[in-house]
Each structure stands twice: as structure tokens, then as C-alpha cells.
Image (cartoon, rainbow, N blue to C red; front, side):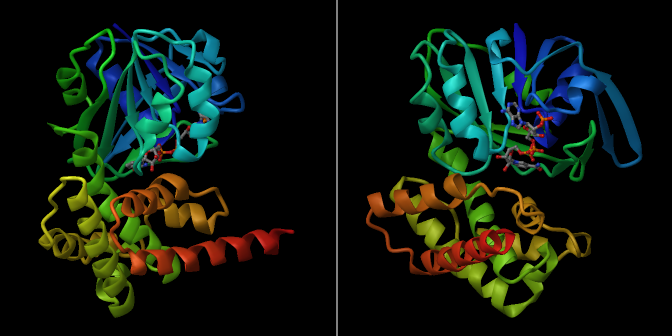
Length: 308
Ligand SMILES: NC(=O)c1ccc[n+]([C@@H]2O[C@H](COP(=O)([O-])OP(=O)(O)OC[C@H]3O[C@@H](n4cnc5c(N)ncnc54)[C@H](OP(=O)(O)O)[C@@H]3O)[C@@H](O)[C@H]2O)c1
């Protein structure tokens, strides 16, 4: 089976490197038209003291050339409105959406033919890649991957073995909410607190105000998740905060905070707005999240005005 990877950044580059390492797959990479990879045609994956380079044999920026049976979508969700409509002519494929946020699969399904299968996935991996080069750095070697079926199409691909070639620990969850809410708990609370308090991962845990905000937002996410039959133990928030207190997280930032500081677009729609919509639909009050979000949107507006 041929594999296509759309969005060969940090996650997509990592997926490409691991599947190349497995040596069993015909892999096509799909990039933006301005991608540095169109010239470099390789991915270098670095982890601990090892660094290996994997040549890209097939690369395209024209979506009409997509011909994989299994298609990973690993672009930022800020690109979804551009990328998803361009996939509408494809049939009998299996799409695997590895992105943060919630509601991504529902959005994709609006554009795809019903013969396609859609799988949604989250991971706690931390990988980085600069847009201008081909170097991917893996920061946590033990990475978990949770996936769920969102839409069953005509073809059933065997995916468990494939995912095990990429991630250390793979879990198939019952539905998409089971896969997405636990990661949303981290993304939503930590990204908001990190931007509002200009805090690194460790400070989020060790400083009183961001820690309190994470605890409060975390509780609201757990309540909304419950309304969608996802049980997240409240102790998960403490576990998260204890983890962030570790020395390795000093001076390390969540990627949305890095995007905010660099003036890049943020994944606000999928990480924040879609959560609020789900909360409203379930009639769950989320006053702390809403208030923090309002502060974030004011900051984004100020940033926009300062550019003019
Ligand atoms: N990085 C992590 O550790 C991590 C962990 C968990 C979840 N996530 C989530 O995974 C998703 C991907 O994140 P990421 O960190 O991998 O982002 P990223 O490094 O920005 O990679 C996305 C890549 O997409 C490519 N791209 C942009 N527009 C495109 C288009 N129209 N068609 C094809 N490719 C396009 C860009 O590369 P070119 O310009 O070279 O094409 C870019 O490098 C996000 O939702 C993120 O929140 C990331």
C-alpha cells in the first residue's frame, strides 16, 4: 500500500523518517509550493545523540498528484480550510488526521467522498522542525499515540502495525472524543496559561497564577468531556502539573506559545473555539475558559494592530 504524507513539518517529517526506517513502504510527500523540501528532498531526524538522513523519493505540491492509499494529514489545523477542500476528488482512501484540537475529522468529512475512511489521532510526542530546513528533532523518545475511527469507508486498511512502526505506544480508542479530549485537556489549559502568563512549561507548574488557571480550565474540560462520555480522572491535572515541574521543562515552551511569540497563526479554532461549541451544545458552563480566551483574543487583536 502506498502512503502519502500531507504536511512534512515536525510531525509529518517524523512520520516520514520512521516509515522510511521501516523500509516497507512506498512514500509520497506533499508539501506547500514554497517548501524548502522541494529542493532538499530529504529529512534528517535527530534524537539524543543520533542523527540519520532519509531521502525523499517522491515529492509534490500539486494535490492532483496524490495517489497514496493511506494519507496522513499532518499540516497545522490553521491550514485545514485550504487543504481539506483540495481532497474532495479522492475515493477509497484511508485518511489519518494527526493534529491537535477537536472537530478536525467532522470538518474533513464535509469535503470527502463517503468511500473514504477517516481516522483521528493525537500524540504526546514533542518534535520540532524549522520551516526553512529539513531537520526534525525528537525531544521525547517515548511517545504515545491514540487513534479512533471517525468514518468507515469502503476500504479497511490494517493500521495497528503501521502505527507501531512510528510510535512507541499505540492505543485504539472507542470513539473520536476518547482520542481527542485527554490531549485537549493539556493543549487548552497549558497553551492559554502559557500565553497569558508568558510562562515556560516549568513555570506553568511552579508559579501560583498559571497553575491555578490550568487547574480551573482543566476542571471545565473534564466536565465537558464527561458530557461526551469521556471520563478523565481529575488527578490527571495534578499529574500533568507534576510532570511540568521537572527540570527538563525549564525554558521549554508549548508550540502554540512559540507560534504566538513568533507572530504565526495559532490553532485557535480547533483547540479553543470548537471546544466552546461542544460545551455550549452540551449546556456546560465554561466561564474560566471563556474569560481566558477573551484575554487571548484581545492580545491577538493588539498584536494585529501593532503590525498595521
Ligand atoms: N510538533 C509536535 O510536537 C506536535 C505534537 C502533537 C501534535 N502536534 C500537532 O500536529 C499538527 C502538525 O504540527 P507540526 O508541529 O508538525 O507543524 P509544522 O511543523 O508547522 O508542520 C506543518 C507543515 O505543513 C506544511 N504545509 C503548510 N501548508 C501546506 C499545504 N498547503 N500543503 C502541504 N503542506 C503544507 C509546512 O511545510 P512546507 O512549507 O515545507 O510544506 C509545515 O512545515 C498540529 O495540529 C500540531 O498541533 C504537533
